[in-house]
Image 1 (cartoon, rainbow, N blue to C red):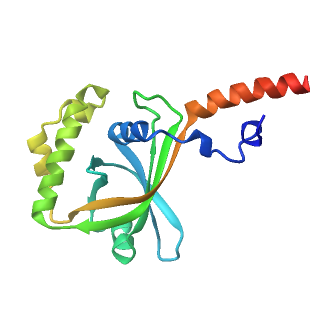
Image 2: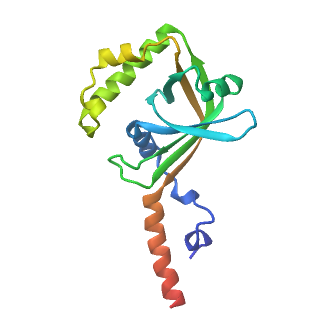
Image 3: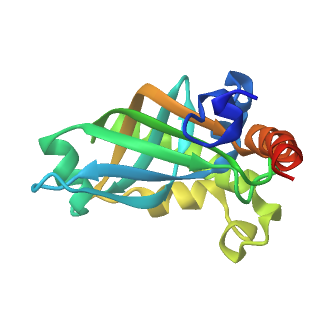
Length: 181
């Protein structure tokens, strides 16, 4: 038995496959967006997003601390989990990257429409808000002078597949128990 199968010191063998990573990004709907404050401490919020062409798009208003922080330093990360998706729990991916702030009308309306359509397609999720959502009204609701759009570009990923780890752990534990037993 290899050292990797005896313990969790190196979990690289439990990487989420690229196609499953993309499935997770396309289905999670919310992520933890993380940035650094003035003192350099990481802090994050859970936020809705839309994945487009390998980028993660989000929205917020200008007065949010994360917007001021990103304006100072675009280094950021996004963390995704499969919990609550059709994939079940145990799959995660963390991206390190950079975020750019957009406040032009063309980008804002493009994104608001994408977000509204995505939310309208999830009407069957039991959420009272999305159940009654009319996309064209939601776009108008979002369109305020203070709202901006965030474009996150991943530069590195840390994918993890808990199903692979569970299978590997069961096999390794059975062998370990037989040797110790």
